[in-house]
Image 1 (cartoon, rainbow, N blue to C red):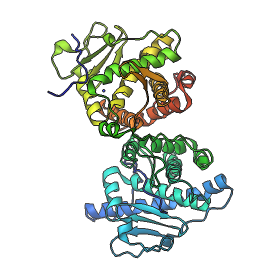
Image 2: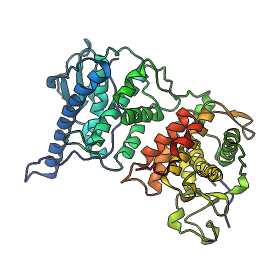
Image 3: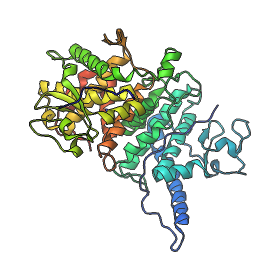
Image 4: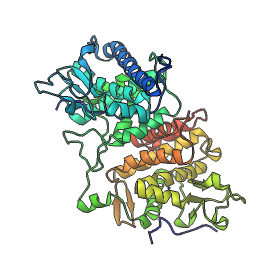
Length: 470
């Protein structure tokens, strides 16, 4: 028999490489030829999207580059932008001959030689089909980020910082789209969340080193850079080489660690998470009363009614508790849908489980604090709990927590912060929250706040009940 997560049952060179694709979005209503086939109309819309994006990205940098670098922006000429396909003749890249095979399943900017090429046969059409029209625009925005580096004489910087800065620059342009300033392009609710999902597909593998010449950053690093640009503009991205962002790529300690993916055995996940969460809050929260494993219970939302949780004298509907991790205020216990958290452990990893359990743990702390909105699960309290969880993750990252289960200090494993991103995305989808609101984008912003700035900022930043997820 497979081992279960929990056994208690009541009576979760020279070329800038590709950026992650964004979510499905709308590029207005492209004028299409009447009477054309669906495939022809799709091709027309695809081509118009690329044309609109290139034009607006160039226009954006004509204003942003002088603001950031105090110099005029040199547009990439139209004849230096290549939709690559078999048989195409590309310019030499710093003296090196290139053909379609160099652009296949890729998009790149060639420093010094000053041109952009993208795969117009496989990559871009697939992105357009799978993620929507803004996806190809975002890839182009990333590549223009490398062109900006070239014009700012930053082509010789470490690769990982160039890639993250290009993600940041791309975020600054997407913010322009979100504000309705990009002619013919717009965002819809949920687009940014899907962008995060796509971004993870282009992250470095867990255990990679930031010093690797081909390093692009972990999923968490790339999301962080993109959000930096989206929230604060290109000015936030420019100092990435002088004042680098935090890079969280962590190498595996040994072959055994790599073989396990940094995951502890399944039966240890919940007990270890409880230990570490209690250690954290005992250090940062005066008067904290630590819950125990006896306060944590599991259930199967599809199982017999007799084992479903009872909270406040009533049994919630199966729909309300399916794929749920929560704190029952009335009766003072934590509960989770075991099949769902088993899926998170199996398909995402142990820190995905810890992240999802940390959120109701933070709610418990908020209730004891009298945190505004905690009892009503208001948006500001949800984001505050995510910020608390970011502080918890930072304490682990810094080796400040310990466990008797593991016999010493416990630190984050390679890929753990990517598991947080994945867990937030998965939980939003599993709870039916994805699609119309960028809930995960907002929650990760709050998590990053706690992780990068510390637990101490959370109460001040999220106590205002006017703070919302939308």
